[in-house]
Length: 192
Image (cartoon, rainbow, N blue to C red; front, side, top):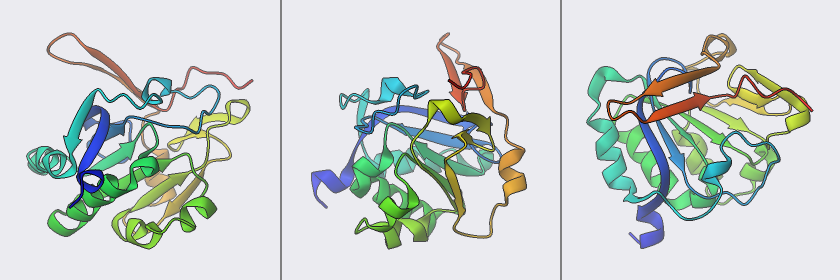
């Protein structure tokens, strides 16, 4: 395994979230995005400088350590597909070694993902793909979509549109150390 395949630039990790997919989910936010969508809710994840540099395998073990307290894992960012090798390694291990569901957010359109060499392998490991750049003037904040142009692709039959519609738009997590995380799809930003 090369360093590129095994190391992930990580912005954050939330072990228990209710606003990033169906059920209680672990959320992985990668660090680094060059897409530059105006009004992005996660603009702090755009620079390449990682809060944490972690191996995909160590992150997998952290997630597996949560046991049956979570239903699945959501990978967001930043742009996960700008770190395809380590993200794919994590997804492959999740699919092969657990029964956890997987949601993947990307700013790339589905047609752009289809052209990536890793597309077939990615699709084999993901239950729901949420694709497309955020467009502030089409702000939506519903069904895990930040803007109306984003597309949802159910790659397995594990979830339905109703499952995504039932997810809260956002949540505030107050950690024991006093750190506060506001996560989900920003319900406060009005369209332009």
